[in-house]
Image (tube, rainbow, N blue to C red; front, side):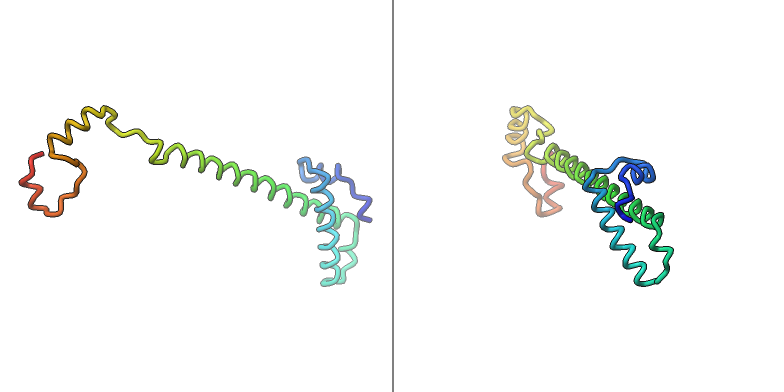
Length: 128
C-alpha cells in the first residue's frame, strides 16, 4: 500500500517540493506511526490509503519545517558572529584618533587620564 503513494502527490498536498530522501523518511515515519495508531485503537480506518497519505504529508511537512528552521537558525548565528566580530573591542577605533591630542591631555592632567579617583573629596580639589 505504501508503494502506491507518489512523491508528486505529497508535494502537491503540502505545497512545496521535497527531496527523495525527505520523501522516503516521511514515508517510513508514517508507516511506523500508522502501525502504532492501529495497535492502540484497533480501528480499520487507520489502515486506509488516504489515512497513510495524510500521515506522510504530516511527516513530510515536519521534515521541511525542521530543515527550514535549522537553516534559518544557522543564518542567524552567522549574522550574530559577523556582528560580534565587527563590534569587538579590537576592531574599534578610539573616539579621538589624534594621538597628539591624547598625549597633550595626559600631560595636562599629569599622566594617566583614566586613573580612578578613590576619594570623592579629591574630586572637588582636582583641576579639571
